[in-house]
Amino acid sequence: MDQRKKEAVFSYIDQEKQKIIQRGDDFFHCAELGFREIKTQQMICQALEEMGIPYEKTAQTGVAASLGTGSSYHIGLTCDIDALPDGKGGTIHSCGHSIQTAAGLTVLEALQKTNVLAETDGKVTVFFTPAEEFIDFAYRDQLIAEGKIRSRSGKQDMILSGVFDGVDCILSCHANGEAEARFDIGSTLAGFLAKKAVFHGTASHSGAAAHLGKNALHGAVLCQNAIAFLKDQFPPEAGIRLHPVLTSCSGDVNTIPDQAVLEMYLRANTQEILLDCDARLNQCIHNCGQALGLDVTVENTPGYLPLAQSKKINAVVEKNMRLFCRGEEDIIHGPVSGASGDVGDLGYLIPTVQFGFSGIQGRFHSDQFAVIDPENCYIRTAKILCGTILDLFAQKELRDYPVSYEEKKAWYCKDWLKCTAKIS
Ligand SMILES: [Zn+2]
Ligand SMILES: [Zn+2]
Image (cartoon, rainbow, N blue to C red):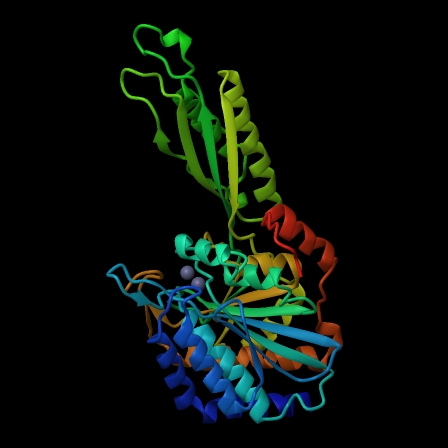
């Protein structure tokens, strides 16, 4: 029974192959930056209307569309929709998010046209999520000030608005840069935060009365050394990447500087290490300032949390992935990635997976990026997602559920994002 449903969905996808690839191409050529995906949103909504699938707009330029009416298990599929600057004044889909957008529509269409969800006890919602790339802050901060969004990333905004409340698991996929293997599973994604440390001292004549001043630059230099030594205390697998930059310093050659600013990104592979390193980093900053009698202020800006994947859901994904592999060598297990994504934030709250698919030529985030294997990008990927959804609906024992969602969301909103706006 289960198998028959899968076969129906897979053959529908094969039958519609040309249309699906064409749609992927159309989205690839509609490249818009985060929270500016106006045309992309229109194209998604139009496709959903043609399919007769109800949807809601969310997070300024996002869309959420559901199939199935059951309440026992709610599967979410997140599909990024935003593009990047091409370095020449234009935009380009150089992270492959257009492939995800197309995949989300393929999954909805295939599940609906084959009517395979008719007797399920759950529902599936595809979330077309804007603004995954963490860029363009002036525009996004303006939107926040105008009350149009609540955070700089699409998924963060949707978490804050309660869009993911009640979702039991999250599926997602992302293009990878692999040349040989078709897929990867269980990849890490680093988490990060931005930190700005300001050392405040006392200005004074650097020749006549240097001893009456307090050199803020000395605090920053001492701190840069402490940070270099701190990094030594973490093992390589912690993925600590921390490179403080002196972004401003007052004074001139005849004046003791009274202010020095160190800015840095802190990256780590797990949430525990990220928070631990952050606490120790703050100690370095404060203690270095204190050692020289300087005042110090520290400002944190949250980025994305590291991705922790659901092993249980990944087992289901892998089973379906194997249907489309030539052999063991087609799946890379647990690659370590220095990249980050706002899917990491979802992974903290809800059991989440993100598998990778190959089929790309050219560097990511460059104007060389191109889809060269549409079969892998658009066809096999959509089949894996549909197969996983059908398995999760058919076999309750395969499911994974959120643990302490409300508690975690409260920490996430107040302590991590430091969002003071009322949480719905
Ligand atoms: Zn990217
Ligand atoms: Zn991306």
